[in-house]
Length: 297
Image (tube, rainbow, N blue to C red; front, side, top):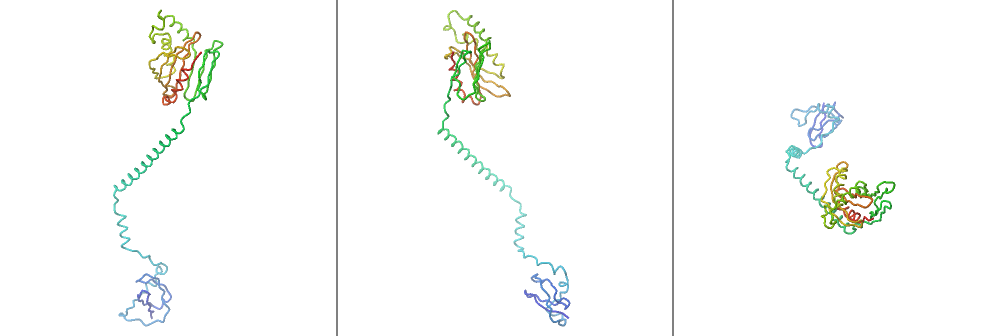
């Protein structure tokens, strides 16, 4: 005996009555069906439109397996073709170049903006001029304008100790040091001057110029790569002195630039050195000029 029934999609089935109540999967729409518990009917002839499907009903996988999802075959094939299609490497390079140019443009705009902003702020708030306070070495017999805010120190002048003073601002400094050897050399150079007086002598032959050249070798020992421009005699409140600009290296190869000035008095001969990092010369040169030109007895 057999049971006949149809799926909602129209597919017809005929199974044995032993399968009544069991589940099966429709071959047409893949939907899970349950065999009805109907009245068994005699076996139909082979020409009957119903087909026998006992195996589908007895297959345990067909009872628990859910119907597979619907898939658009054409769409899936098209996506697969797009994935397998080789990419054009030039497109990646173009995208990278466009992104790099965009970032470079933004950086350039930011840099210009920073420069403009910095220039504007500098124009609105100019640096205050350097102020000075008088430094006087009572025992050393000299005075000078010390930059206000700089570290100032000095001693000597008694007990046979040569007087000295130092003004320091970080990596920039101005030192004034007395030297007895230089003073004796100054006396010797002065005694050997021409009878006609200093007015008849070229600057290079004056006692202060000879003393300045004598001290050059001694001071150069404190540096490496010491190079000095030709000196010149100038007048300051102290009197006639000789000054020259120099460049050198010190420490671990730091480049410095500065002035070396030679002064002489009855008791002492002074070596003055004003120096700073080479890159900061424009910042400190006006301060050096002021201090050196302010030295007096």
